Image (tube, rainbow, N blue to C red):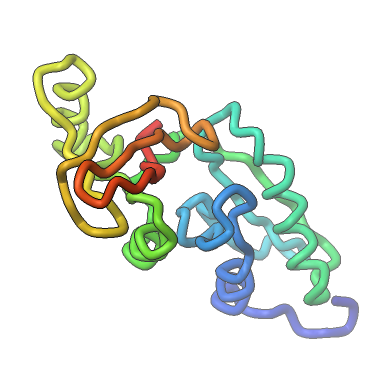
Length: 174
């Protein structure tokens, strides 16, 4: 952006809200909550990204998509920073993102991994002392059954609805 005025951070956030997640293109990277910070450091735009988990296979594509979106809008000096702490949690998904998942046929996470009390419920389910109830994103029934812990991507599990008999993915807590 030589000779031009730097776009404000709010404008950059708007641009990033148009970048789809490569594995679930119905939601944006900002809906997913993985863009942690955007700031100008002098004449360099710094975008901080927290992957959904450290081994996420889409991380490289996400970074390339961010870079392309910003360079296409004239950003010349850009640095992407990876932040692993605090780790990403499904609590960072926006409400709009959760609704987009549901409308797309993916059940959004019931809870996240944040240490605000929901972690206790998650720990109880993992220990087998509580049952996770996943509503079907198509018909809303809670009469669902896990088919496989692993779905079409590592962040999803496969379920089926006992009422409408449709299979669906559940965006699970990682």
